[in-house]
Amino acid sequence: MKIIYPLLFILIACFFLGPMFLAFVASITPASEFYDYTRIFPSKLTFEHINKLLFTLGGLKALIVSIEVALISIGISFALGIPAGYAIARYTFRGKDGIKLAMLFTRSLPLIVVAVSLVTVYMRLNLTDTALGVALAHAAMILPFVVIFTSSIFSSTFIEYEEAGMVFGLTRFGAFLRISLPLALPGLAASAIYGFIMSWNETFAASILSIQNRTLPAHILATAMASPDYFKYAMATVMAIPALIFIFIIRKYLISIWGISLK
Amino acid sequence: MNALAKIITKNVRKFFGDVKALDGVTITIEEGSFVVLLGPSGCGKTTLMRCISGLEELTDGEIYFDDKEISKLQPKDRNVAMVFQSYAVWPHMKVRENIAYPLKLKKFSKEDIEQKVIWAADLLNISELLNRYPSQLSGGQRQRVAVARAIVHRPEVLLMDEPLSNLDALLRVKMRSELKKLHEQLKVTTIYVTHDQVEAMTMGDKIAVMNSGRIIQYGTPEEIYKKPATAFVAGFIGSPQMNFFRCDVVEENGQQYAKSEHIKLKMPTRINNRSVIVGIRPENILLEKPKDQDSISLEASVYFTERLMPETILHLDIGNEGRITVKTPNDLALPEGKTIEVFVPTELLHFFDTETEERIL
Image (cartoon, rainbow over all chains, first blue to last red; front, side, top):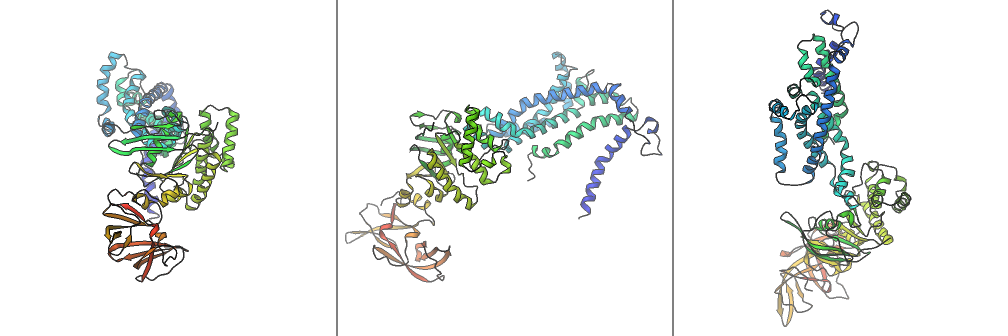
């Protein structure tokens, strides 16, 4: 057992990290050595592909749009989702379980189906090809998660903390603002980053709802087919690194926002 | 500055959906007194406290602090303070900030806050903990912080919800006397919720015994122990529990007796009941015949002995009457199955109605 477990972990880690590592290596391999089958590792490393992708091929602009879209969609889904999550955590009301179930059902509707009909609505509203348009679609995707996450965060913060606040001089809203919100902050930050990654990785809706102002994945999808392979790997690297960093930062909160305790 | 409030509740009722938590509670708590709400879990004692604090809205009835009706006010406008069972010391604030927060919300000046925080911290011996976070404190220390936070702004009413139940036994005994001393110093009107009768007896100026959403008896610890209003109160107060016997009331030669198979007791006065519940506390049953008071004797066989050192609790079988417990102050080793004679002094008996379970004599 002492040997089997570490071995198993190494095997699983290789399975997931291997392709990523190879993609990363490929993205910094000089073009001249890329198709040389005699070597696995390049003789020197270059950031030429990544540079070109970002600065010549419009990658940076798409990256900025991506961040813009992600921030707006987080803003919208938090403004609506935190009060909803709080209400589900703290109050009992009619249809509460139904609402929670309906939240999960939104996942059974593929975003691409929604996106097509959204285009017609957006055309009328002049929202096509804007960051706000894509962000609205992403907010619809993120919102149910924010509600479920925040309700689990708020139900794990003692209601007595708030009640103490109310007894000692706060209004109900004040107690939420001064006591529960600060206590929920780590969890909320984690769900924000989770939402960021969902928006960051979303391709279909972004491709359909925008033409000029594309998010990074939509931009890559549109241009990748015509690019040499090492550019594809450079794109993969640019896409993966922010997501990896974020996941690494929030890994311990990911457990808590799903309502599982490791204690 | 240190105003004390008299608390009056009038016919307070509280429903949670269809569940009746409080069923018409009327009680007057004198200013400056220490009143314990005592009862089994689910009896409504915590709900009553939460109604007084404003954390629960009343379904019906009124609550007054002095002459001012406060039933409709928000908790923050009632000038109450509360010590929670889980302490509810805010984990994102240092001890100093926790204690200062009620003052800050009441818009005290900076110097005032500083001074009062030091006063409260001194009073509870937590001065050296002021710069720590609650997660760095032990349960007992957190408890002290919660109490300091509750008294720092000199509230009119202090509410404590089973504050000692999460402490270990030794600390509980220590805190019991400290809280009582603190009350003697501050004289703030205090309501203390507990299910622990030792806490109630030792701390309360008065005890309100509650059951199923109602106050069954409200009186001094002595009254409640010596003259329990119902069989429920009699059984709830005292450890081990009071012994009860169901007896018929029979008349022989113009004298009423409470009689069962093995027991025959002279009734001290005439009553109209045809049957009664007779109660006798384990500590009132004697193993030697008392010289200066009337008693009846019972034959019993030893079922089990608990030697607590130095006192002993005997569980005895009396025929078909069931089992009784006897508490003696001495250490006693009696073999199981041995037949002994015990003596019940007649003047220490309690009589309750079989239907209403209310005290008759």
